[in-house]
Amino acid sequence: MKKHTVIKLLIAFLILVTASTYWFTLQGEAQTSDVPASWWKKDKDDFPELKGGPEKFERMKRQQPVDLNTLQQRYPDTFILRGPTNQNRIALTFDDGPDSRYTNQVLDILNEYNVPATFFLLGSRAVAYPEIVERINNEGHIIGNHTYFHPNLVDEGDLDTLEREVTRTEDAINNIVGYRTSLFRPPYGFLYNELVEKLADMQYRVIAWSLDSLDWQEEPSDVIANRVIDEIEPGAIILMHDGADWDGDRTFTIEALREIIPTLQAQGYEFVTVPDLVGIPYAK
Ligand code: ZN
Image 1 (cartoon, rainbow, N blue to C red):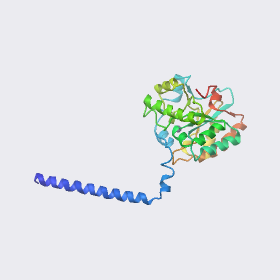
Image 2 (image 1 turned 45 degrees about the vertical axis):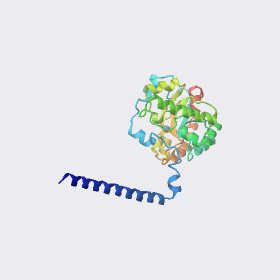
Image 3 (image 1 turned 60 degrees about the vertical axis):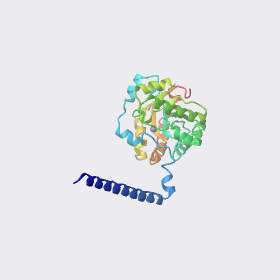
């Protein structure tokens, strides 16, 4: 084949590909616009997402980069796993809120049983739902910092990202409740030495947990409740979630609380906030 014939064929092929791509794009747009706006806009676009991905995917596919116990031993003054084990006091903690679907229901139950808790909020969601943040604060719960967009701090592990995420959230919370929290919980529990040291420089204590309810796996409520009740120990810091990604479901967490709280109270446990449990200030 002569050279110019090859070039002509090539040009014809490129025109064909471009035209068909354009045609398919038009078809795609036509289909999207047929879907009612109320259906596809509602949850996903308006709701601040977890930047590092849903807990259930991130935490299943990865191991803790540095084990929580190891970090606690390396940084005993900064990194907290549990409270004193010689008292029957324990702390409920809730991550990833405020969530307009679930946080108010969690607050209703805590109110019913007169139980204070500690909420680790996302800055992006605090800004989106300041009225829920006010309610958390007004009802005697303590608020901590859980970053602004919930990144995986080990994947995006530079100190600038950490500082930006933490400071922005601290400012957002302070604007609503009027104090600068000194409690930080890392998304997915992912941290390493330099990040812990940076948080200590920023006058934070890192609040991890000693009992993971694994509620992010969205198992039936009795499975979640039994796990917590079976594994409870004096001084426990219990990890739960009032927030989820737009397609996540925390109904099981809420139902489990109705079982967990009265059962543990009947066993003589007292629920307190994390700063009360550990004996540290909650604000800078
Ligand atoms: Zn989280």
